[in-house]
Length: 310
Image (cartoon, rainbow, N blue to C red):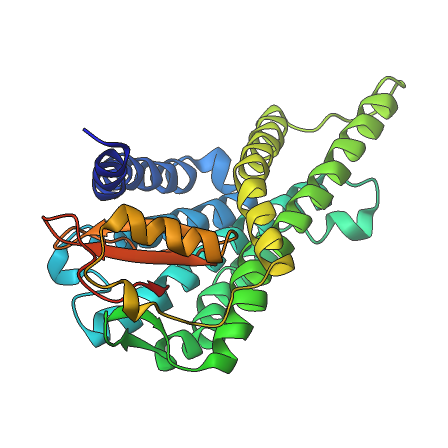
């Protein structure tokens, strides 16, 4: 089995595996935090439940891409809905994680005024806001996307919105800003915990309930893991912003040539391009990467259609 075939298998089966493991885990997470009375006393529980709902929605969208009849390449409406829900669920999940990090910082603060921000009343009011805001913000993903001929890849129909999405909506709102907030509130929470530990060494000081301490440690661990997992994507996006995507172009003269020869010619002319060889009738996953050229070839090893960026 070649590396390319292995990559296709992984890209096809990984959404199924993630869906099979992630959905029960997210559902169990929501049930535990809302079912146990002690945990319901913490405002963080509401944000955890909101994040679980967003995670389940995101996993469902990713899983549907592995089904040919519901993938983004199946139809125009599937393309529009797929991109819209992918962007929306990603923003939702990161928003609730940021709210949970903020709540832990507020609950461990020495300021009474700041601690008042960590309350169930505020959590109940904030819980529906991400579900209302992010669909409105991401409506352009539904309007300005479609299957683009001749290859009918799911992509943007407006060059202006493509620039806005690639350089602001997708990288900044879904990755860079949330990551910065997570790191900032995570560090501030650690600082508050150290101050609280120092103060509690003095006599006649009240202690935070054990379940609150466990909740704080859990959220700090989740914040650390999320930051570590998100950081590579943030670096990748910032690198792509620094070296922007080239204008869309194609190589019609390469049709009929051996695929390896065509790949070498493209790389020789454009060393910054990442060339992907795609066999006809093979599943092609949607890629948000920049400077990616797809070269389609047939069973005879010849380029079957015009290579293109996207």
